[in-house]
Image 1 (cartoon, rainbow, N blue to C red):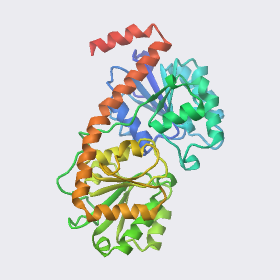
Image 2: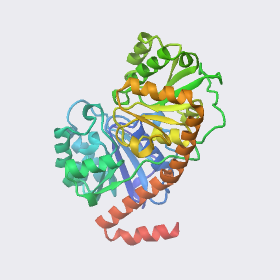
Image 3: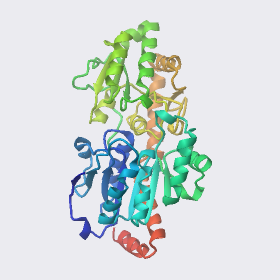
Length: 405
C-alpha cells in the first residue's frame, strides 16, 4: 500500500469522504472526481481517494487541494474479497462519514465499509464497459442486487442507468438519485477561429479537423472512427483534400490503432496526439468533435466539447442522447456503423454554417443544464442529506457550519 498523508486526519473535525475506485488514472469517471473535489467548498468535507490498483501520481496532480490523501492498494489478480481485511482496517482507522464507491469494480468494497461501521455508503454507476454494453448481463445484475443491502444510496449518471438500477437490479426509486456530470464553462470556452496546437501537423487554417478525446480502449471504439474516416476521405475528393482527424488519448489499444491507420493508408490524414493534459487547448484545435463509443454514461469529454462551442457527432448510446439534441446541437448516429459516422462527418464538412449553429446551441445547452456548480451542489446535498439521516445528531452541526459559510 502506498499512501500520501497531507494532514492529520484524526484531528480534523470535517466529515471525511473516502472515494473508492478501481484505479485513479486518466478517464472520464476519474476526471469527474477531480472536478467534484476541486470545486466542493473545503470547509464542508475532507476527502481521501483509494484506488484498488494504483493512484497515478501525474493524474493526482490534477487535484488542486492540498488536504487530499491518495492511497494505492496495488490489487493483484483475483476476487476483491481478498482486500476486505485491508479495507476494513483502513475504514476503522480513518472513520469516514461517507464511503463513495464507483462502478462495479469497486462496488464490493461497500461490505468492509458496512462492517467497519461507516454510516453512509454511496455507490455511483457511471456506465457499462465493453463486456456488458447494454447492461443485459444477468450475472452483473445479480451481483449488484447482492450488494444492494450494504449500500445507503445510489447515484446514477443518466436516466438510462437510473432505470437499469430500478428495473433490472430492483433498487427502490427513492434510493437512487440521478446526478449528471457537470462541466467547467469558464475553462472550456469557444474560440473565434481554430487555434494552433504545438506539434500538430494540422494547423493549416484551410483544413477541417475532426477530433476525438478519450482513452484508447475497446468501449470507446476508435477503430470504428478510423474506418469511418477512411470511408470519408476515399469517397470524397474534397474530404481527402481538407478533412483531417485528431485522436487525443493514450491506452492499451494504441499499437493496434496505429496498425489500423497504416492498413487504412491514413497516416497522413490522422494524428494520434497521445495523452494530453490541456484538453481546452486540444479542443480549440478542432472544428468538429466526434464520440464513437459503444457505451457511455454522461460523457465528460462530450460536455467539454459542447462547452467549447464545438458541433458534435456522437453514437446513440447511453447518456449521449441526454446531452446531444439530434439536429440541434449535433448529430447522433448508430454505434459500430462506420458508414453512418462517415455520412455525418461528410454532412458537417459540407455545411460549415450548420456546424457553427450546432456548436453555439450546444454551448447554450451546457451552460443552462450541465454546469459544474449544479453538479457539485447536487453531491453536497446528497452527502449531507444521507449523513443527517444516518446520524441524526449531525444535522445541527451541518446546518450550523453551512450557516457560517
